[in-house]
Amino acid sequence: MGALERNETLEIVERPKDKKAVGCRWIYTIKCQADGTLNWYKARLVAKGYTQTYGIDYEETFAPMAKMNTVRIIISLATHFGWEMHQFDVKNVFLHESLEDVYMEIPPGYGATNVGNKVCRLKKALYGLKQSPRAWFGRFAQAMVSLGYKQSQGDHTLFIKHSQDGKLTLLLVYVDDIIIAGDDELEKQTLRERLATQFEMKDLEKLKYFLGIEVAHSRQGIFISQRKYILDLLKEVDKLGCKTTGAPIEQNHKIENDKESPKVEKT
Image (cartoon, rainbow, N blue to C red; front, side, top):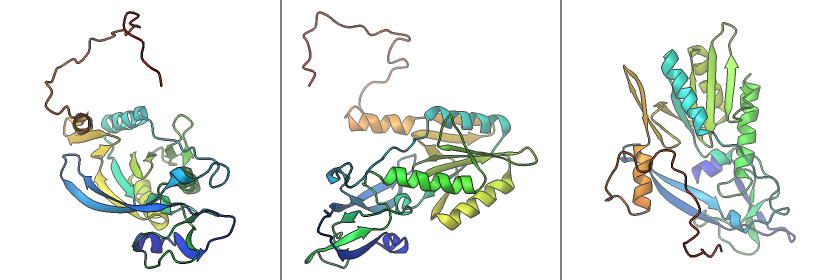
Protein backbone atom coordinates (compact mmCIF):
# COMPACT_ATOMS: atom_id res chain seq x y z
CA MET A 1 0.00 0.00 0.00
CA GLY A 2 2.89 2.31 0.78
CA ALA A 3 4.39 1.71 -2.67
CA LEU A 4 1.03 2.40 -4.33
CA GLU A 5 0.74 5.70 -2.48
CA ARG A 6 4.37 6.77 -3.06
CA ASN A 7 4.04 6.17 -6.81
CA GLU A 8 0.57 7.80 -6.92
CA THR A 9 -0.66 4.67 -8.69
CA LEU A 10 -4.38 5.15 -8.14
CA GLU A 11 -7.05 7.54 -6.90
CA ILE A 12 -10.64 6.98 -5.71
CA VAL A 13 -13.17 8.49 -8.13
CA GLU A 14 -16.76 8.07 -9.30
CA ARG A 15 -17.01 5.43 -12.02
CA PRO A 16 -17.90 6.94 -15.41
CA LYS A 17 -21.12 5.53 -16.87
CA ASP A 18 -19.42 4.17 -20.01
CA LYS A 19 -16.54 2.44 -18.16
CA LYS A 20 -16.31 -0.93 -16.45
CA ALA A 21 -14.04 -1.62 -13.48
CA VAL A 22 -11.43 -4.37 -13.60
CA GLY A 23 -11.30 -6.63 -10.53
CA CYS A 24 -8.20 -7.04 -8.33
CA ARG A 25 -6.74 -9.18 -5.55
CA TRP A 26 -3.73 -9.35 -3.24
CA ILE A 27 -1.06 -11.97 -4.02
CA TYR A 28 1.31 -13.13 -1.28
CA THR A 29 4.51 -14.93 -2.22
CA ILE A 30 7.67 -16.15 -0.51
CA LYS A 31 10.87 -15.14 -2.34
CA CYS A 32 13.78 -17.56 -1.93
CA GLN A 33 17.52 -17.42 -2.58
CA ALA A 34 19.17 -19.65 -5.20
CA ASP A 35 19.89 -22.21 -2.44
CA GLY A 36 16.21 -22.30 -1.45
CA THR A 37 16.53 -20.31 1.80
CA LEU A 38 14.05 -17.57 2.67
CA ASN A 39 14.80 -14.12 1.25
CA TRP A 40 11.69 -12.04 1.96
CA TYR A 41 7.90 -12.09 2.11
CA LYS A 42 6.23 -10.21 -0.72
CA ALA A 43 2.75 -8.74 -1.11
CA ARG A 44 1.50 -7.47 -4.46
CA LEU A 45 -1.75 -5.97 -5.69
CA VAL A 46 -2.69 -7.61 -8.99
CA ALA A 47 -5.40 -6.53 -11.41
CA LYS A 48 -7.58 -9.23 -12.98
CA GLY A 49 -6.36 -8.53 -16.50
CA TYR A 50 -8.24 -11.51 -17.92
CA THR A 51 -11.42 -9.44 -17.64
CA GLN A 52 -10.04 -6.74 -19.94
CA THR A 53 -11.38 -6.44 -23.49
CA TYR A 54 -9.04 -5.79 -26.44
CA GLY A 55 -9.75 -2.44 -28.11
CA ILE A 56 -11.64 -1.16 -25.07
CA ASP A 57 -9.36 -1.59 -22.05
CA TYR A 58 -6.04 -2.04 -23.88
CA GLU A 59 -4.37 -2.02 -27.31
CA GLU A 60 -0.76 -3.21 -27.80
CA THR A 61 0.76 -5.58 -25.22
CA PHE A 62 4.06 -6.85 -26.70
CA ALA A 63 7.24 -6.34 -24.65
CA PRO A 64 10.64 -7.92 -25.53
CA MET A 65 12.18 -10.51 -23.20
CA ALA A 66 15.88 -11.11 -22.60
CA LYS A 67 17.33 -14.03 -24.56
CA MET A 68 19.15 -16.84 -22.78
CA ASN A 69 21.99 -16.64 -25.32
CA THR A 70 22.53 -12.97 -24.45
CA VAL A 71 22.91 -13.85 -20.75
CA ARG A 72 25.50 -16.52 -21.60
CA ILE A 73 27.44 -14.16 -23.88
CA ILE A 74 27.61 -11.48 -21.17
CA ILE A 75 28.82 -14.05 -18.60
CA SER A 76 31.39 -15.34 -21.13
CA LEU A 77 32.67 -11.81 -21.82
CA ALA A 78 32.85 -11.05 -18.08
CA THR A 79 34.88 -14.21 -17.52
CA HIS A 80 37.26 -13.50 -20.41
CA PHE A 81 37.88 -9.83 -19.58
CA GLY A 82 37.59 -10.09 -15.78
CA TRP A 83 34.53 -7.83 -15.53
CA GLU A 84 32.42 -7.65 -12.40
CA MET A 85 28.70 -8.28 -12.89
CA HIS A 86 26.18 -6.63 -10.61
CA GLN A 87 22.51 -7.43 -10.30
CA PHE A 88 19.68 -5.04 -9.42
CA ASP A 89 15.99 -5.43 -8.81
CA VAL A 90 13.52 -2.65 -9.60
CA LYS A 91 10.91 -2.53 -6.85
CA ASN A 92 7.25 -2.41 -7.89
CA VAL A 93 8.36 -2.29 -11.51
CA PHE A 94 4.93 -1.87 -13.12
CA LEU A 95 3.97 1.08 -10.92
CA HIS A 96 6.19 3.54 -12.82
CA GLU A 97 4.41 4.07 -16.13
CA SER A 98 1.35 6.24 -16.69
CA LEU A 99 -1.97 4.90 -17.96
CA GLU A 100 -5.09 6.48 -19.35
CA ASP A 101 -8.73 5.61 -18.67
CA VAL A 102 -8.29 2.32 -16.78
CA TYR A 103 -10.61 1.80 -13.80
CA MET A 104 -10.36 -0.89 -11.12
CA GLU A 105 -12.38 -2.01 -8.13
CA ILE A 106 -11.17 -0.70 -4.77
CA PRO A 107 -8.62 -3.18 -3.28
CA PRO A 108 -9.64 -5.07 -0.10
CA GLY A 109 -8.40 -3.26 3.01
CA TYR A 110 -7.38 -0.11 1.14
CA GLY A 111 -9.19 2.16 3.60
CA ALA A 112 -12.16 2.84 1.32
CA THR A 113 -15.16 0.61 0.73
CA ASN A 114 -16.88 -0.25 -2.53
CA VAL A 115 -19.93 1.83 -1.69
CA GLY A 116 -22.00 3.60 -4.28
CA ASN A 117 -20.23 4.05 -7.56
CA LYS A 118 -16.67 4.52 -6.24
CA VAL A 119 -13.76 2.90 -8.11
CA CYS A 120 -10.00 3.37 -8.50
CA ARG A 121 -8.70 5.25 -11.51
CA LEU A 122 -5.29 3.83 -12.33
CA LYS A 123 -2.81 6.62 -12.97
CA LYS A 124 0.10 4.15 -13.28
CA ALA A 125 0.39 0.61 -14.64
CA LEU A 126 -0.36 -2.27 -12.28
CA TYR A 127 0.62 -5.95 -12.20
CA GLY A 128 -1.88 -8.10 -14.05
CA LEU A 129 -2.95 -5.51 -16.62
CA LYS A 130 -2.29 -6.73 -20.14
CA GLN A 131 -0.59 -3.46 -21.17
CA SER A 132 1.67 -3.23 -18.09
CA PRO A 133 4.79 -5.05 -19.43
CA ARG A 134 4.80 -2.96 -22.61
CA ALA A 135 4.27 0.30 -20.69
CA TRP A 136 7.12 -0.52 -18.26
CA PHE A 137 9.64 -1.55 -20.90
CA GLY A 138 8.87 1.55 -22.99
CA ARG A 139 9.48 3.72 -19.95
CA PHE A 140 12.76 1.96 -19.07
CA ALA A 141 14.07 1.99 -22.66
CA GLN A 142 13.34 5.71 -22.86
CA ALA A 143 15.31 6.30 -19.65
CA MET A 144 18.31 4.29 -20.94
CA VAL A 145 18.40 6.14 -24.28
CA SER A 146 18.30 9.46 -22.40
CA LEU A 147 21.43 8.33 -20.50
CA GLY A 148 23.33 7.86 -23.78
CA TYR A 149 22.87 4.09 -24.22
CA LYS A 150 22.12 2.40 -27.54
CA GLN A 151 19.55 -0.37 -27.75
CA SER A 152 20.86 -3.56 -29.33
CA GLN A 153 19.05 -4.70 -32.45
CA GLY A 154 19.96 -8.34 -31.78
CA ASP A 155 18.30 -8.31 -28.34
CA HIS A 156 16.19 -5.25 -27.55
CA THR A 157 16.61 -5.80 -23.80
CA LEU A 158 20.37 -5.16 -24.07
CA PHE A 159 21.68 -1.58 -23.80
CA ILE A 160 25.27 -0.67 -24.70
CA LYS A 161 27.45 2.39 -24.09
CA HIS A 162 30.99 2.97 -25.38
CA SER A 163 33.01 5.53 -23.40
CA GLN A 164 35.42 7.95 -25.05
CA ASP A 165 38.40 6.07 -23.60
CA GLY A 166 37.28 2.84 -25.32
CA LYS A 167 35.66 1.27 -22.29
CA LEU A 168 32.34 -0.59 -22.46
CA THR A 169 29.23 -0.81 -20.26
CA LEU A 170 26.42 -3.32 -20.81
CA LEU A 171 22.97 -3.46 -19.22
CA LEU A 172 20.52 -6.33 -19.68
CA VAL A 173 16.97 -6.12 -18.31
CA TYR A 174 14.45 -8.93 -17.80
CA VAL A 175 11.21 -7.35 -16.52
CA ASP A 176 12.44 -6.13 -13.10
CA ASP A 177 15.85 -7.88 -12.98
CA ILE A 178 18.89 -5.98 -14.25
CA ILE A 179 22.48 -7.06 -14.95
CA ILE A 180 25.19 -4.42 -15.31
CA ALA A 181 28.62 -5.46 -16.63
CA GLY A 182 31.65 -3.86 -18.28
CA ASP A 183 35.09 -2.39 -17.63
CA ASP A 184 34.04 1.24 -17.04
CA GLU A 185 33.62 1.37 -13.24
CA LEU A 186 32.90 5.11 -13.21
CA GLU A 187 30.11 4.76 -15.78
CA LYS A 188 28.59 1.80 -13.92
CA GLN A 189 28.48 3.82 -10.70
CA THR A 190 26.99 6.81 -12.53
CA LEU A 191 24.40 4.57 -14.19
CA ARG A 192 23.32 3.10 -10.85
CA GLU A 193 22.94 6.57 -9.32
CA ARG A 194 20.97 7.95 -12.26
CA LEU A 195 18.63 4.97 -12.43
CA ALA A 196 18.04 5.24 -8.68
CA THR A 197 16.72 8.78 -9.17
CA GLN A 198 14.03 7.49 -11.55
CA PHE A 199 13.22 4.05 -10.12
CA GLU A 200 13.22 2.47 -6.67
CA MET A 201 16.01 -0.09 -6.94
CA LYS A 202 17.49 -2.80 -4.73
CA ASP A 203 21.19 -3.66 -5.07
CA LEU A 204 21.59 -7.46 -5.09
CA GLU A 205 25.38 -7.06 -5.40
CA LYS A 206 27.28 -9.73 -7.41
CA LEU A 207 25.27 -11.68 -9.98
CA LYS A 208 24.18 -14.97 -8.40
CA TYR A 209 20.87 -16.03 -9.97
CA PHE A 210 19.28 -14.82 -13.20
CA LEU A 211 16.71 -16.41 -15.53
CA GLY A 212 17.05 -19.76 -13.81
CA ILE A 213 20.87 -19.69 -14.08
CA GLU A 214 22.94 -19.98 -10.89
CA VAL A 215 26.26 -18.12 -11.12
CA ALA A 216 29.18 -19.10 -8.86
CA HIS A 217 32.34 -16.95 -8.84
CA SER A 218 35.81 -18.36 -8.14
CA ARG A 219 39.47 -17.62 -8.88
CA GLN A 220 39.33 -20.07 -11.78
CA GLY A 221 36.42 -18.22 -13.40
CA ILE A 222 32.64 -18.41 -13.35
CA PHE A 223 30.63 -21.62 -13.04
CA ILE A 224 27.00 -21.65 -14.19
CA SER A 225 24.35 -24.29 -13.56
CA GLN A 226 20.58 -24.69 -13.44
CA ARG A 227 20.33 -26.97 -10.40
CA LYS A 228 17.61 -24.99 -8.61
CA TYR A 229 15.62 -24.55 -11.82
CA ILE A 230 15.69 -28.32 -12.49
CA LEU A 231 14.80 -29.16 -8.87
CA ASP A 232 11.84 -26.75 -9.06
CA LEU A 233 10.66 -28.46 -12.26
CA LEU A 234 10.99 -31.93 -10.67
CA LYS A 235 9.11 -30.75 -7.57
CA GLU A 236 6.33 -29.32 -9.73
CA VAL A 237 5.74 -32.67 -11.50
CA ASP A 238 6.32 -34.69 -8.29
CA LYS A 239 9.51 -36.39 -9.58
CA LEU A 240 12.01 -35.41 -6.88
CA GLY A 241 12.56 -39.08 -5.99
CA CYS A 242 13.36 -40.22 -9.53
CA LYS A 243 16.71 -41.82 -10.36
CA THR A 244 19.34 -39.63 -11.99
CA THR A 245 21.22 -40.37 -15.19
CA GLY A 246 24.17 -38.70 -16.87
CA ALA A 247 22.53 -38.62 -20.30
CA PRO A 248 18.72 -38.64 -20.09
CA ILE A 249 18.37 -39.12 -23.87
CA GLU A 250 20.72 -40.26 -26.57
CA GLN A 251 22.35 -37.35 -28.42
CA ASN A 252 20.95 -36.28 -31.81
CA HIS A 253 18.05 -38.68 -31.36
CA LYS A 254 15.36 -38.06 -33.99
CA ILE A 255 11.78 -38.54 -32.88
CA GLU A 256 9.55 -39.81 -35.66
CA ASN A 257 5.82 -40.29 -35.99
CA ASP A 258 4.54 -43.55 -34.50
CA LYS A 259 1.98 -44.60 -37.08
CA GLU A 260 0.97 -47.75 -35.20
CA SER A 261 -0.18 -45.99 -32.00
CA PRO A 262 -3.82 -44.92 -31.65
CA LYS A 263 -4.53 -41.36 -32.71
CA VAL A 264 -4.61 -38.69 -29.98
CA GLU A 265 -7.64 -36.42 -29.68
CA LYS A 266 -6.05 -33.07 -30.62
CA THR A 267 -8.49 -30.93 -28.65
